[in-house]
Image (cartoon, rainbow, N blue to C red; front, side, top):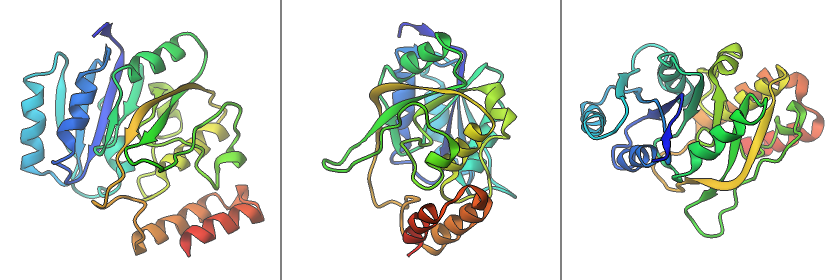
Length: 247
């Protein structure tokens, strides 16, 4: 490690004990260490708690298990918000429990924020499956540019100033899908500025273990809710894109 940062990392988790240790290990292995890690578990699984407590004894920074189950739980956004509410640092970062940061992720994203007036920094991602394409976010996008197609902003590849995150009230806990894209839309609508680290610094696992991209009634209902929420931004082409996802 090259030092420590004023970043709280939040890992939302939901019965992914087979993936979670690798995700935590990647946070611990950052070249720029976070100030703290919070694992937010929306089911209160004792096995998950045990994994986190084991890492708490090994990590060179505080690692906390948070039981975020109960009323209002059940979405990644709700879990992320619960973890973020504990942050006392100036910066927030999130990593899903089935994703992995590369060692330089925090070092490069935090450096961008320190060297600019951006409110959040976004890095590129790659899939762990050959031939699977993930969009790469570029500069200068506005809310209408991103409302239909996610430009490469996911729950694991950005660092945001804590004040900025709280100014837009964090993630929408009622959205089971598209909650990352919704956060981006609202951030841009509110006038927040971003920068891009043009490097693949996050690996997204592609697997069959209950991902949000799975076709399901919950996903369909989430897309419908998202469309209703952002109806004023959607032009006919955007509507067709989102309706195709529904179909």
